Amino acid sequence: MVKITNLTKRELRRRLPNGQSIKFGPGATVEVTSQRLLAELKASRAFTVEDEAGSPDVGGGLKTHSRPPKARRTSAKSKKEVSLKSKLQKKVDRVLKKPKGLRKSKRAD
Image (cartoon, rainbow, N blue to C red):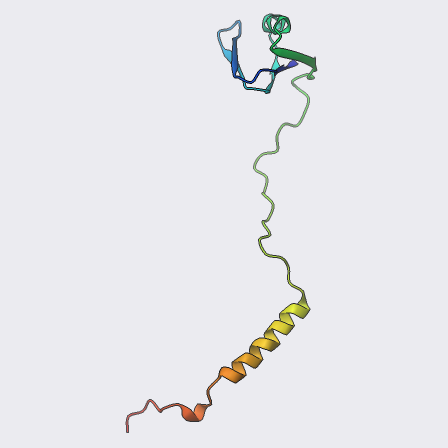
């Protein structure tokens, strides 16, 4: 296998001997095994040929079905911030709270 890179700014297609076609996107790199296609692409100025990519039996491939990382949308708050906030909230609640003596009774006399 050999890596071939498209140097042009447009998409190019080449046909393999078995009838299939390979699409080379702009600046894309594709691995090619066909010797006939390799000889054709080496003669073209639109492509660069890189070293051997290695045998197809080597490598673990892409990691699939792995758990995505947990998104952290809010920063962690320190315990001091939480305790200060709760103390301030309690003070505000005491000031805003109405005494029980001002409420009307719900019973009908």
